[in-house]
Image (cartoon, rainbow, N blue to C red; front, side, top):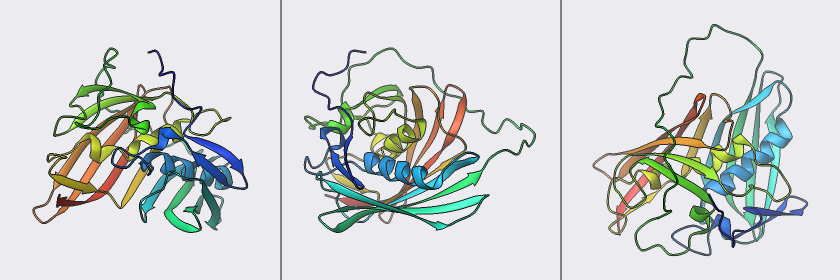
Length: 265
């Protein structure tokens, strides 16, 4: 597909010393001055993987807590290993804007190398990749940097339709300028979209706020397309859960979960 000529170089421009400049591609659909939760999740996961990963260790779980709206302004990332180990290792990271922490994340790396019997646990049925589609977003939304920086091909549902969705995603630009996009970055960038892709009630009448997101990974995706099978389940007292099973052409990747605050506008 022909890429938009006005896409930025990447979601983030590195400034050195852990500082990053978010571009138009990080823009939230609800506030042009805020970031969507996906790119910060991927950035923090990348920084934790850079510090705590290595040969024989795979990042297997990331939890991201959104402490407040994330300004689309220069941010600083700090990261530390909080539980060293050769078989399991925990790290934590934070994103600050103007000296205030806006996102906190933690990750577990797990040692690889053992070869248990293949029980087919990675098998996951996925819909075929649809042909190229017009890119449309939430009703009433104009320019949306995050949405435009990703190609969405729906096999079920759409941004303007309530209910579950099944969609293939492709990132049009790298996460960080000067660095090749990784499968881990792709998975984290789109995982926080689970609730938006599977809204159970009209967006113009209800809020769906995920204060946190956890992605547990069986493996990291390969190839340029990541598949999401997303659905939202609601209780009758204002709490919901959005879940997305992620896959690529080789099968299951992992599962993203988001608890939701559900409230009328």
